[in-house]
Amino acid sequence: MTLTQKAPARTAPTRTAPGRRQRGRTLPVHVVLVIVGAVMAVPLLYAVLSGFKSTDQLSRNPIGLPDPWVTSNYTGILGSGSFWQLVGSSALIAIGTTVLVVAASALAAFSFARFAFRGREFLFTLFTMGLMFPFAVAALPLFLLLRSLGLLDNPLGVILPQAAFGLPMTIIILRGFFREIPGELEEAATLDGCSPFGFFWRILLPMARPALGTVSVLAVIASWNNFLLPLLVFTDSTWWTIPIGVQQFQGQYSAEYAKVFAYLVLAMVPALAFYSVAERQLVGGLAAGATKG
Image: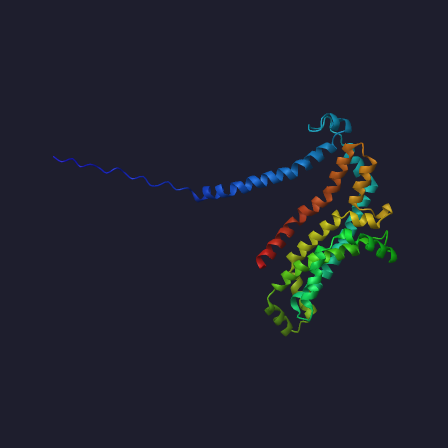
């Protein structure tokens, strides 16, 4: 009688699930993002909490929670007309700068992208060289020029130079976007009797809305954070902007650290609110530009 032996059953090799492998690859990226987010959020949270303390609390317990919560630091600033005057002045200058730089850059970028003329690349190179020109070098000549034109203590004395210094980057971004628009669209519009400016206004600008939104956000943020130029132009407090107001408030209440923290937080709120609203437009414009590039 023969006994048949059964072969041992083979176990299938274990395979790592694709989702697990993907999580293993992205885990270091997530860790880095969490660390970077914490480094950026912790100082902001510390400033917000410090604004709810008194100066004595901040000296005795700089890390702990406020006890009691002092809301008068924030309400006192929000109730002052000078703070809202600074916000209004910064908003007016930022909007004026953005409208001017986007309008001028869109026309210039359209010429550089869609027209062939002698010296085009040379002129474009001159604009790109403006990126290497620091504002501090031009501070004294610009001050003398604005004084001769009577633009000191005038918002145009800040809007015009800010727009001029914002032209190089804005033209570079818009030119790259305009060049990716198919030439067949322009030919079809020309056959339909559309002039070059009509093509620019009716077809090109609506298609370039993501790029226009991106450069608009960048222009607003750059204008809002500008400190040196308004300090150079405005001697009268009527047109002071938020960065100058922060400096003046810090000098006036240098010993009351809690009030200074509250003022810094409130000065950041308008810019953070605008960025949170325009973040999708900014990211969308950069993604569209990267896809077309």
